[in-house]
Image 1 (spheres, rainbow, N blue to C red):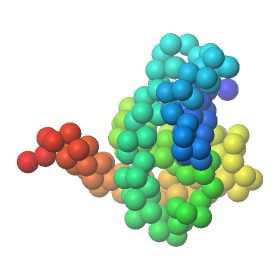
Image 2: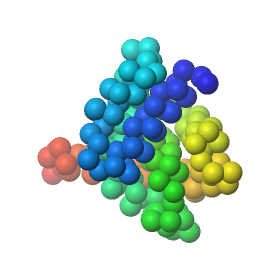
Image 3: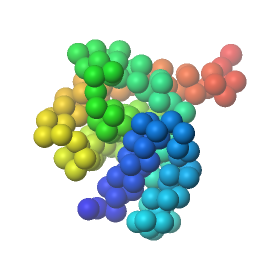
Image 4: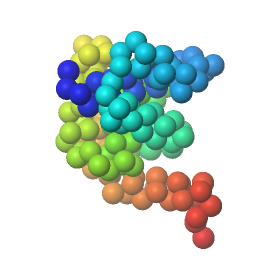
Length: 153
């Protein structure tokens, strides 16, 4: 597994666990995962950026996924797939340092590793739909971040 894929994998594991077990704190889960499978400092930092970038925006990301991909109701999406989507969506719509094609390819790889047999095709389809609205979605997210930070006029 490529180094950054390993970091995404760890972030996915942490997000998944905190998603299904509400009483598990992400910092604690990440620390335990890093003890079990250490990453180089830069990769651990990348995983940390994903986790703590996605978590505060989970509701917003979910609403946007639901808005722009209505044929896939979020409450019917497996928790692992939902978290893969959140990571990829955050990477290309918020973080914006990962090229869209790379974010999608990485998400499909994670789906192959952790999802059902149909997950890779599903993830690719949903992200393909979201990509068509990337600029618009980025504006919504940036406005939301600015609003929460009290920077919006």
